[in-house]
Length: 318
Image 1 (cartoon, helix red, strand yellow):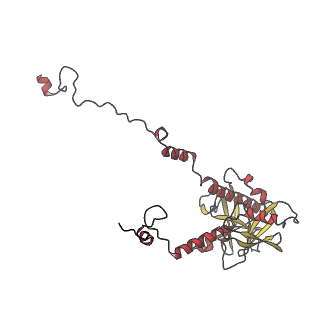
Image 2 (cartoon, rainbow, N blue to C red):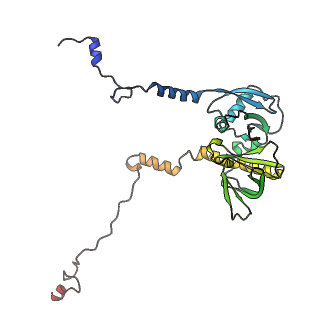
Image 3 (cartoon, helix red, strand yellow):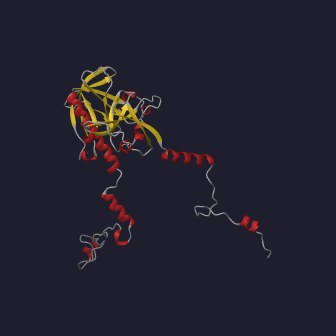
């Protein structure tokens, strides 16, 4: 048999796939590769972010990514030595300054900045992050997390329409807020759930009936709402009541975030045990008791001297 050259043998050798399936390997098209690379770069990309300190007259620049939390930012600013000269009561917390609505809220240390920025209006680049000392630092620390979702209730002034305030009885329970005209709750309606709403203190001048004004704003982007009236809810009350509402709602929202991050993402012990048993073999798998059948009554009564049933004509003849 004549010997073939190396080129001839190479041309007759089938190409093996990289995944071991035996089928020829076809690389993805360039457009798909570019999209994958762009997505991977976005996940690991770092951008420079201004973080204001105290009175908004000073700021530092930090690099943040998709997984950067508020606690990470505080540590980065501390490592730069930018917080040494500041004095005050409370602990350091990062605040979301929503200047497009004239309000602010403390950001919990485990919240991601990318989630907060995704809710901002990209056409109005006015919102900023601000570091300041606040008593909310101890209230919102992980050690202060309540064992159950807080409850609270009381009368507030609610802005039902722009510039129109009405008195309503508001109830916080099961990390949701309800409104009714009276405290008997007969006409109670659900206002919103804290699964996707957070509480803000209003800092701009508002023509409100009471001295303290706070709001509930969605954590989603405004573009998701068909009715923009559902995006933001404004309330007004006395100073002491307003501070109490802020604390209770902040804690209730923290409780929701904890449940989503630590409880709902983990299987229960019963489910885990069942999954482990199902995945095992032999005696470790799920077993069932053998089915016990009751003794069936014979179709013909063979007891006694006659084989015929009592009362039958054949038995009488026998």
